Image 1 (cartoon, helix red, strand yellow):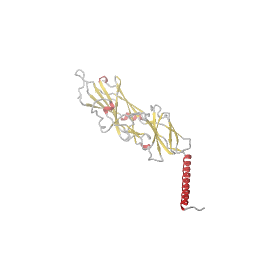
Image 2 (cartoon, helix red, strand yellow):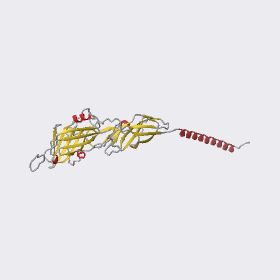
Image 3 (tube, helix red, strand yellow):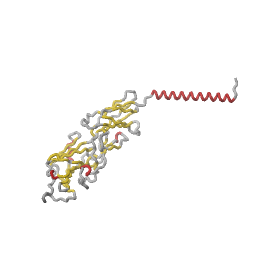
Image 4 (tube, helix red, strand yellow):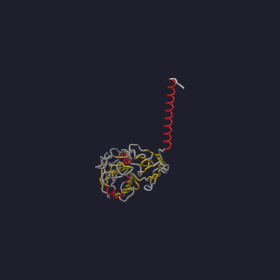
Length: 326
């Protein structure tokens, strides 16, 4: 049977179109079958073990997952209750960093990579920290160049070991063991005279760390001062407690000057500088996450009463350096 040139051309075009459609359909089916058979992710089951921080007050935890095979990839963030939870990750090598999220003062930087994740607080002042509304409050001599930072909240954290996630449907059990990433410094000063004449009290400590790394627990290299309120606990005793990231970030034996500020009933302003370096270092050697030191004596004067007593210059702070144990 003979075909006209026009009909022959139409026949060839139809056959070519059919072959092309067949190829496309076969390719599409093969691609779909491949995707259907391949699992792209699996579960990570996260739990927290608090054996290294049994007295923590954390209420929720952030976990950052870092893909060790893709260092330029941003970490994947999850937030969990203390009971833990699950994460969905692609196969490969991973590392996790965790820290508690129930904080107000804590700030974070360096989270692009697990080893540089660092906590710090904003800049503050002696006035803000002591809660004394007296301007131009001095810092201890020799520490005037140290910045004053806000007291950090309690912070716990750690990094996991590297783990390899193989997509097999079984998932991976990840146990994280947070540790203290701060230290509480407690100071008690006994045998303090004339406390009944004090209108306001405050304190500061120099030479402490400005930051801390979550994964390693290492301190940032900058030294700063922190200020804090001071309370009377009886007629001759004052006590104070302040959270610090740690001490001696630059040198193995840094200087720590404790400054006590006292505003008396007559309006006079006094500050007392005590070198407590040895006491802090000796207390830390005993271990634990709380450093407790005790100082004996603080020469607060009796203010002017009926024309008798000290006659200081009201508008300036009167500085006194005293020996530990005075």
